[in-house]
Length: 253
Image 1 (cartoon, rainbow, N blue to C red):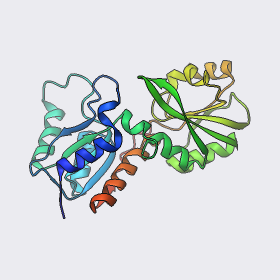
Image 2 (image 1 turned 90 degrees about the horizontal axis):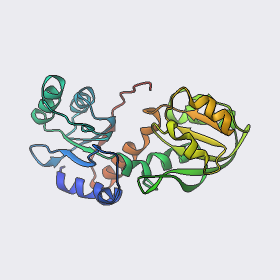
Image 3 (image 1 turned 120 degrees about the vertical axis):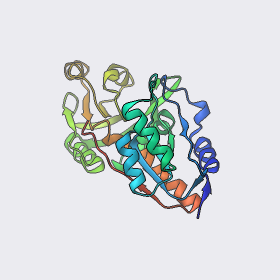
Image 4 (image 1 turned 90 degrees about the vertical axis):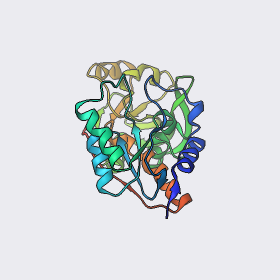
């Protein structure tokens, strides 16, 4: 069975409200590369768009690769070396690439934040952490002990989090922004949270967390952002009756 590439793209754009979400420069949300046949028979999801991931998707028989971190973040010319190899692999193997960054972070059902919150068994989902004109994260309610929360995070992501135990032992207002929001810890804390879960942050946030009295759990940028692409691919699979897989290429970061 096959479905037109255009149907897949339009459905993703509709669900994620792609055109409405302002993103960081270079994100290029939506279809980034077409395939030759303009048809989809199998979906592969991954966190990062890269040559290695493209080759894994091809090995798994995909003709569309759905990623969170796309191919284009800065001027990409010239198309030489590994960039040329990447484009050649995509074109010769009929592999389209669809990317969704912030639209897939913030979606209330398919998004990384919402899915991670659910995987942690937390209640509530209040929007918070406003940037780019909208709330990029969610606040979930406890109470849950910090040690227990760390155990749940490790189980959900498959990675051991780095913990800054600078807040209360019982977490009641837990802010979640997947990816690399550690540098914006002060913004997160201004919302009155006592615990902040994100992917990564710099060294100096340890002292800042102590000053603010906020627990921080760094679950890994990659590890906290596997949820959205899986949810989107699964929903597409159910709607269009297409097989899908997630290809894991963890960075450990």
